[in-house]
Length: 303
Length: 106
Image (tube, rainbow over all chains, first blue to last red; front, side, top):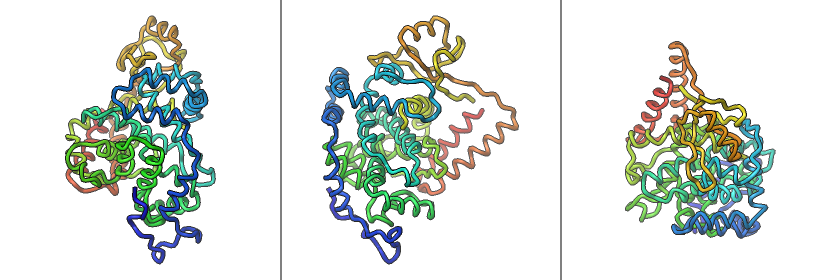
């Protein structure tokens, strides 16, 4: 795990917003150590993702063990977003519509993302965040299937790839408000704004958080490397979950799934594109299914 | 061009077309996307306590409206890709999205 930021903060060029003291990645690591731990069942669900022989029964048992987790997943399903007027009253309902393994990874991810409550006074659109997260998860699942990788690990890593944004927004709202203002002023990619204002980016924060929570290594890597999937040497050799999440993030932006006016398609890593054996025709074939699924997932699950 | 909307079961009539698969509790597909729903499908979904489903809505446009949509589509893609990379893969992706969106309008 990196402790020092890759990009030293240049205070002369970019003073921190509203005279705040500069923030370091080391301080973020200290923030993470003070966060309450995840519910035990979430750890179990995460570990079943790492275990290819883990079956439906194990996941079902995991969800059933924790009433408050099931309740939280339903609260997410019933949140007032996107005009769904009909109450989803049971995990059973969600499963009927979405399928079983999908609900397992969703319950896990909903509990992780629901863990952070960003303050209301920061100008951040949580609906767009969720729509993009769900979109990236669905793109990652489709790309993982195309590349012969684990589809549910792809889904979870896709849904969690920006968890660092949510954590920074919640634990350091004043600093992150500066990042958002810088991004809007320069119309740049989010990691650029983060490096300019914080000296590190949300992928590094997400890496620190997911490894603290003992997520499977491939998910930690995918979160860490979703903007630069060639960052680990072994990724040059075969397609990895980091490649999947990298392209999924870009595809979700290209499909405009967040519905955000400021959406921006990041640069594509040609190595990831090649390792996943993608071309125009294979990508195009994935798009209708992703868009269809996105409608029903957002209606059910957005916060 | 078709869009998919999630509707409550009591708003769904026979003849409507499913826009997404419906699964049972074990993940098996009960009805596949593209199925034209019948009275007996709806009764069976009600018995299984399915409360909503994604339905395809077909929209019909005049040529003028289609041209306006094509122009909107190109402008939105230019906006989304305003800071994209310039490599071969980036260009292939942008072209793919453009073709996909324009085909959706036809």
